[in-house]
Length: 60
Image 1 (spheres, rainbow, N blue to C red):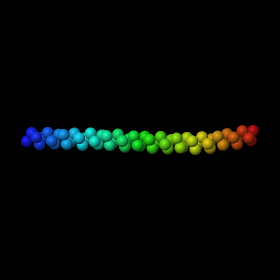
Image 2: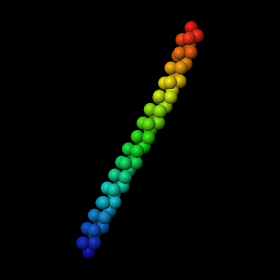
Image 3: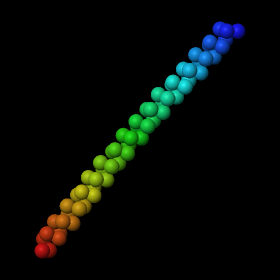
Image 4: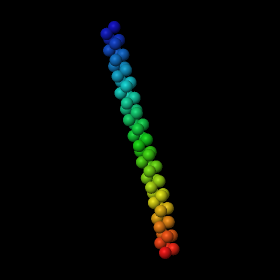
């Protein structure tokens, strides 16, 4: 009976650890995706802002 309890404990412990690792990977992927979206947004908005400043500068 003790062997079965040890096996169950080891099995549950390994499942908890593997889910933690999977969650960590998912969060890392989400952070990377958010960083890429932010970089693209800042680049696009920066180019638009630069063109607006150029048009205002030319108008003056």
